[in-house]
Amino acid sequence: MAAVTEPSATLGNTISPAAFHSASQTTLETSELQLKAFNAEKKQDEETRSSDEVVVPVNDNDAPNSTLPTANHQSAIPNGGAAAWLQVVGAFMVFFNSWGILNTFGAFQTYYESGQLFEESSSNIAWIGAIQAYSVLFAGLITGPIYDRGYLRSLLVVGGFGIVFGHMMLSLSHTFWQALLAQGFCIGLGAGIMFTPTLAVLPTYFNTRVGLAIGLAASGSSFGGIVYPVAFYNLIDTIGFPWAVRVLGFIAFATMLVPIFFMKQRVRPAHARALLDLSAFTDWPFVTFVLSTLVGYTGLYVILFYLSYFGQSSKITDASLSFYIVAILNATSMFGRTLPAALSDKTGSLNLIIPGAFFCALLNFVMLAVDSVAGIVVVALCFGFFSGVFVSLPPVLSVAFSQDKSKIGTRMGMGFAVLGFGVLIGGPGGGAILGSGGVGGEENWRGLWIFGGVTSMISVVVYITLRIWKVGFKINAKV
Image 1 (cartoon, rainbow, N blue to C red):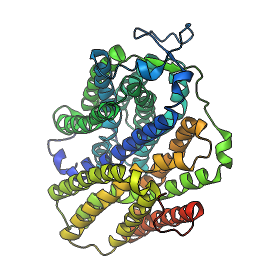
Image 2: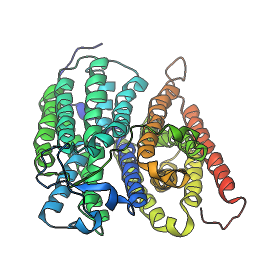
Image 3: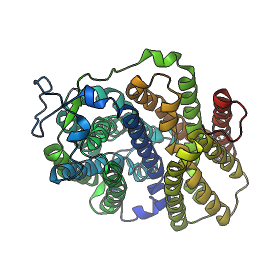
Image 4: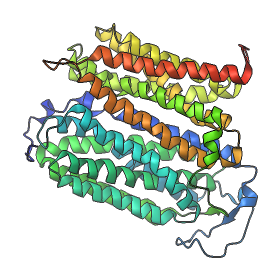
């Protein structure tokens, strides 16, 4: 492995804008997935929550064993006010320091590939970002029950410490394994520990404005995805990699003080949710849907990871245009995430995810014939929209396919942990296929696009099978 070398002023030639933003779409989509899932769970539980929850005083100091009176949750929701909006500000900073930081990995991957810190294959380097993202999904499986016991502030402190400590350790790293431990595991788990509980806080302060509150908070991930990469990109040329990473850690430390001091757990369930629900493994519609979505997401992340890099590697686009390709894909994905949510109540979520997954698969195969700027732009426009459809609906469908609605909270956590394997397979797995071109180092783009198309198409076939199982061959049925 190469020793740490301070980058020269020509790093801009090493880090391209396309690779600089390569991880942004993946992490933002996964964040949207968790937000949708929490709202789906909240809707199922709304009718019974008043008898199952107890009020926690606003000045609660993480004393879960204290005797607390029961109260009607819905009538007690403030739905505004200074205390409620402070929770939104705090949650904004949590998103800023969780998915916002994860969105920076594209810049790190390109820097690592330059060999100035260590020398590893693209597939191995991608494991750092993949584990970082998966850790956020997996951590919710454990932090949910801990939050239910009243330990919100403790989770924020531990998670914030993990992020700051991970950056400090990353600044001292000289090898791939050191970077993997510091950035992949430490920062990833830190982000996951504080992210999931934040989703649970806002609906306890808002009812009719909960969508606005969560939307404002979630915008922190976009803001962080701008601040952190830009800071890293500019600082690394002037003060070098170690101090650039430390500055990111200092930013995280300062901004995490806001949620630690101002976010308060207002209510908590009388009984914490279970860590696992073993009966889920015998609920075959639920299991089939989750596994099918895992396979589909494996193909989904192929284009999300490699579309902009394909343009540069194939000499079809320059670095500047590749940046706009990523921006176009991100912009259209916003429409793909919001429009289906408005239509699903009328058409049914399964009726929408089938064409969404189908066109994601089809566009992978279309990439086999793309050899022009126009072709890449069209694929970016279309894939951005349909990938938005594909990622926005699985949480709602997980509820629909779960036969025991009383355990949906635990099953959502389990489902997130399983779906995360799609990130682990699609990113590093795609990189391994891309690097399998043989002697001469020729990149195997054909194999990569076929891999993405086949895995996505498998999920389409299973979705259609599930639809037939539920309603038969009725074309106009809402499902």
